[in-house]
Image (spheres, helix red, strand yellow):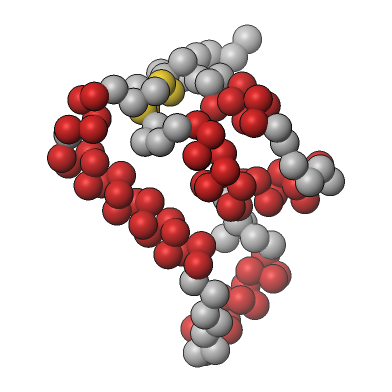
Length: 111
């Protein structure tokens, strides 16, 4: 039997519908899911079931909205994720070329 994993409560920073449409559908995890299963999409209700599987994930409360440190951190991480997704610049320096070769040899996510 699997042992429960306990961690601090995590409050998502948007509606689940917006997270599904904006973040999840652009995520590497979703692309990997598509590649592994051959499916082109999942329904919002299936996404919600997965998102609510962990009892430690819950809707945000007013405290999160007024917590300046948590709000700034959430905004920064969202901005960095969006920049990372939109960065399509291909670098041809020796270091990046070597890293590309390593990725091809090892496979994505294995180094």
